[in-house]
Structures are given as C-alpha cells and as structure tokens.
Image (tube, rainbow, N blue to C red; front, side):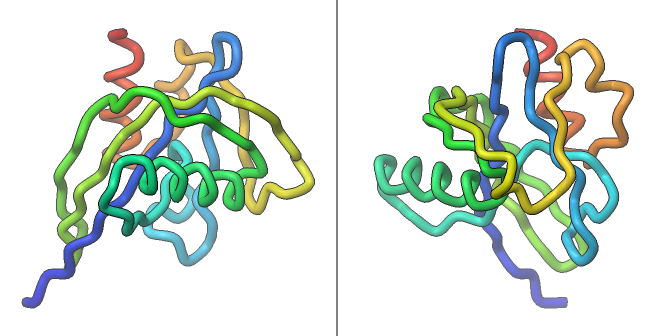
Length: 131
C-alpha cells in the first residue's frame, strides 16, 4: 500500500474559560465526531504558516484568530495517510457566526470528555486539561 503524507494543523481557540469545538461534516475524515478546528497546511516558513492557519480557520469557523504557542506535534496514521499534526493555541480576535460552515460550540475544557472526539482530538484535550 502506498501511503500519502499529510501535514495538518489543529487549533485550540480559547475564549474566556472555553474552547471551540466543531462537528466534522459529512465527507470529512472524522465525520460526525467533534474536533478542534483543523486544516491541511502547506507553508514552510513560520510566519507564512501562521497566516495560512489563521485564514483557513476563519474560513472554516467564522472566527478570526491570532496563533499563539505550539502545543505539540502528533504523528499518526489513518488508513492510507501518514499525518503530522501541528497543534497550536490561539486567541479570538473576532467572531462572525454567519461565516461558520459547520456546527460548532464554545465549551468549558472541563466538559471535553463529554464529547465524542477524534483520537487526536482526545490527545489534545488531555494536553490542555493538564496545562
């Protein structure tokens, strides 16, 4: 089997004591599960990468963010994909609900375990619960 390498970013967007989760849409890899906003990334330079993630997250969620610190890098495989997932924290600058293209919720970190998350979403939830 030929594997395809993917480079993705997942973003923990914080507002007060809550984080943003979105339900993955039909046709997405984690269809029906909840996850942190996630996108495929291609930029190599840090400042371009951060700008790319901010633009893709705004398009996906309607939330304008500022990327902060890197939380972790998670390498994993799903079917024919080998995925490098860069995890970042972000602050909200503005929110426009009308632009959101999916079901999403602001939830307290303490209730993350109540949501059916992707495997990597669960790992990220544990990371932020410990911090």
